[in-house]
Length: 342
Image 1 (spheres, rainbow, N blue to C red):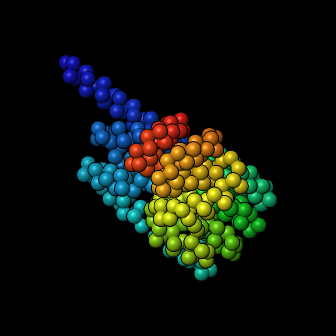
Image 2: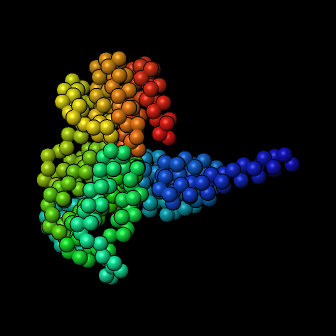
Image 3: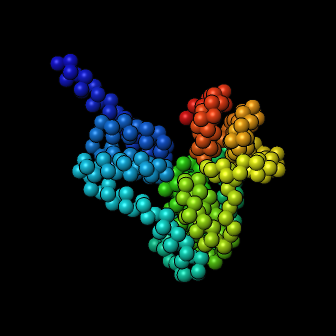
C-alpha cells in the first residue's frame, strides 16, 4: 500500500512539474520551462520529451535537444524526427533567404492580409523603438523583450503603409536581438528573417547589413562561425570582431589591448559587463588571477541591473575557466552572481 501511495505522490509531483513548465513556456521563461520539462521527461511523462526538445532548440541547446528528440521518437512521437530535421536546416534557410534579399529579389511574404483597424505613424513606431533599444542596452534583452513583442504585435499591421515598413523592420530587428539576448536564438532567427524581408521591401541596404551583422554575432555566440561569416559576407560588412562574443581566446594580449581602450568609455549596462568579463577571461588566460578577479568584480557591479542571458553565458565561461585554473575565489564570485540572476 505504501508503495502505491509513494507512486501516486510521485506521479502527482511530476505532473505538477509539467504544468509549471507549460506556464513558464507561455510566459516566455524558457530556461525555467526547460528545467520543469526536464524533470517530467526523465519520468517519461506524456510528450514532455518532445516539449522539452522544442524549448531547448529555442534556447540554442541543440545537442541536448537532439537527444530528447531521439527519446521522444522512441516513445512514439514521430514528429520529434521532423522537429530535429527542421531545426538542423533553420540557419541555412535563413541564409538562403538573406541571399535572396541581398541580391534584391522581390519578396512579398510577411504582408498582412487586411488593412489595420487603427494607424500608428511611422515616426511614433521609430520613437518607441529607440526607447526600447535604450532599455535593452542598459538593462539587457530579458528586461524589455516582452515589451518589444507587445509593440511589434500592435504595429505589424502597419506594414501595408509603405512609410511604416522601415520602422517595423527596425522593430523586428530589435525583437530578434532581444530574443537572442534573452537566450532564445531559435525565436530570434524568425524575427531577423522578418526584419530582412521588410528591409528588402524598403530597399534599405544599411538596415539589411545591420540585421545580418546581428544575426552573425548570434551565430558566433552559438558556435557557428562559418554561418556567421556567411551572414557578414551577405551584409557586405567585414566580419564583426565580436570581442565580447568569442568563446576562444586566440590572442589574450591583443584582446586585452583592444578591450582596455574601449571599456572606460562604456557606461553601466550590458556592454560594459561583457567587456569587463572578456577582460577578466583574457587576463586569467595569461595567469593574472588577481587582475581577473578584480575585473570580474567590476563586471558584477556593472551588470547588477542587467538581465541578459548572453552576459550570463560569458560569466559561466569565466567561472568554468576559473575552476580549471584553480582560481576558486574567482569561480565563487561568478557563481554567486549567477545564483542571484537565476
